[in-house]
Length: 367
Ligand SMILES: *Cc1c(COP(=O)(O)O)cnc(C)c1O
Image 1 (tube, rainbow, N blue to C red):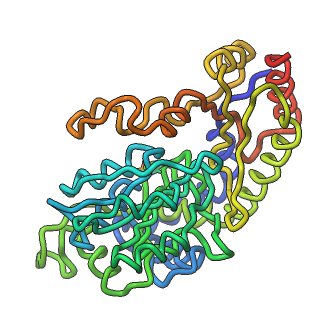
Image 2: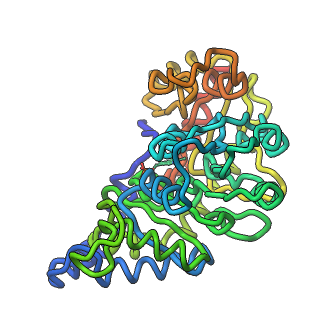
């Protein structure tokens, strides 16, 4: 048997008919940029996240960058970010000229440790970017309260958690402005790049609309220096179709996670994902930890089971961030997670037989 880490091909082919129809509609419309399909998807996704406005953009990194831009965050400003995250969160801050200020994770949920945020706030701090990592909502209410207390903005990075919630309120709706990604491997993935910004703030939504399209509302009249970061009609049409399946697919992820939770507990030194009582997870990633990570990964590779390390090097130790002068030991929890984590196969369509094969192989390793 072979179990790939993620079967994107099957996941999309299972929707072949509706995706082909979506393609046909766009082809026949003859309109490919900022038309009806983008409008329609933006309305659907704002409903899904229970926000007033959604603006489609080219990718998740741009969604973060444009959010920072319209909040006028830039040179000389500081932005609180998790030390344990995908590097895109940090890159967005750097790209607008601000400095990322890392905060260590809670070692149980792997999300930013809310109790450590206040000590990192300075007179330069402008915003906090909580990331709902691996599918689980961060402590979004506490983070919002800290932001209110210090007059900071919250920008949610919801790239990994479409459909999760905190205290029954959807992720992607807690920040002043929220960013998400439709990279093909995300829970809601396009057939190419895509992203979106969601917000309840009309003024911010208008600014994003203008800045994503060359800084112009009326063609060839440019109010500000904008960029080209638009969601394609074609991707929007695919996303409208795929959004219909998202809740059921997220439920399937949760069901598969429960099977792993049950079957892998007390196996070796494995640490399984833990979900905080106020949060839900849509299990973008099922991440386990063990001191024997590399050996376990080899063992699974030899049995044709795909795994991924999310992520092997935390942002502060990446070559790209040498300028900040961090060294090994500065963020020990982020480093420990990087050294011990392994993501095992979990996706809609993973069969009971395949999952059983993965479980058996892991148990065998620890015996
Ligand atoms: C994927 C991801 C992004 C960036 O999304 P892209 O669409 O690839 O630019 C940002 N933040 C996190 C946490 C992500 O996982």
